[in-house]
Image (cartoon, rainbow, N blue to C red):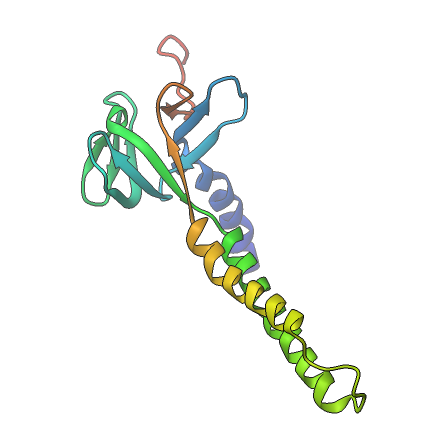
Length: 171
């Protein structure tokens, strides 16, 4: 069993990157760093002249025809006017602010109830901090959920085939 795994595992490791060598690359003018989307990645896009964002998974890329094959349609790269990314930090920030507000109010209420000191009590400032934190915990994820990237002058999409192909004269 170990010898079979010893021979099969390197083959799997070396052949797995070969299937993902066609990429959709997002380039920004004046920047060397690019973003790449591979076959199998989810994509949310907007076509020229439409207001609706569509989503799907990249199933194949036809570099010569400048087409992206999605699960239900073909899309020409030149017809895409915008891409949408879902951000992760707004949800994490909202959760943190929610627990901060609940914790602030809860600890102030517990301190007031069990402190035994008449000078310390739950104040309006405690309620304001809790209310602000709770309202921001619901507002931030809704306001900053998505990032829309417009394709135009400053950004462009390019399809690349990075597979190794020997030249016809080489044998």
